[in-house]
Image (cartoon, rainbow, N blue to C red; front, side, top):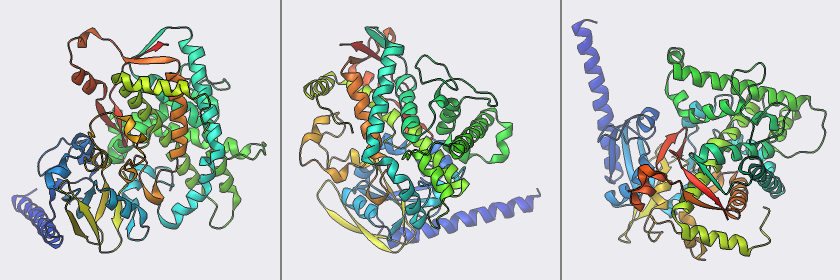
Length: 508
């Protein structure tokens, strides 16, 4: 490239950056210079969010919201702060204000879900309930809702207790002490897979040997015609959703780790097509309300406005498989891992739960961004008790910070302390607790997870006491250091997961 061409390119780039900066300044002035940050690569940039460290003026860094929690809101003085970036362009508000979150979540017309941000990650096989909006989303929800009914809660409860009981008989047996180096990998992930197979209508042989019932003693089996097992393909795909979308397809073949990810997706597609074909060819006419049956049934129904294309069936099967492994903060496997870790770190709380289980002999069986569709406003508050109304120009991205609101001292006393008893207060701040999001787009599988989690906790805690694995390497660490080590997090896929939770289960 000639010197003059280089200078021209440099000049054009500088002009573009200057133009965008000027536009940002004008927008900032139009919102009353509401405090916030200015970034080169903003929160909507996958590369910045999942690859770059925190660099002032450049990127927020990985795990920004979890690492910072409520600190940015305290820094800027309000429970909504603004964020301007060059890539992607535009204004974004980050919210940790309960009233503002409920207002955004409740409105279907003023704020829409920016499906364009979800499509590269979730529309791999077809449109689905997570990456859709408006009438398309309503159609998907109507089809799958019966799978999350109270009737199916019994299926989830029975399936979960059966899976855990089989763990006790097959794997833990009569052992007085069981130590796991990674609770998510060795315990909660296999449980979640087995439960989603039962409630989702997937054949059990997908999680062990073909034609064999689920057993904790089985290793992964790769059936004829496949290069990896279904379990392996699902795990790799779930952990690399964002990685696959962040790198151009053209470079995948030249990078071994990306080739491995591509293989997992190819195998997962083959498994899913086989699942759908098997259900279509089935002569079993029993009325079923599991996810797979409902999706396949509507692929054949042919009723205008209700039927699903083959791609939509594939797309929805895919996202529900991802939800069973790698969803958001409500993900069963990861949430249960954190729950077991916290109970091990806080033995007095664990004992309280155990006593509650013993006393109850009749146990029951049973971050979503938006975009403003019009110019509007939101009202926020701060720790000083002040309130402020801020303009929200049309096209503004609005995101909820779940760690921000869950660690907000306006709503929670000692938010950094593990105090399950706070939820026994009849006046606890329900609007400030949104692990399943809020409004009409809240997680459709909330009840599914709650039933599964309660069943697992009851089964395990009624038989075992949980402690952090003893390790001579950490004999001199303080309790605070132990807590930080056990609860250390990493970003995988689209969720936050524990790096490794080493626990010991002692028979009561």
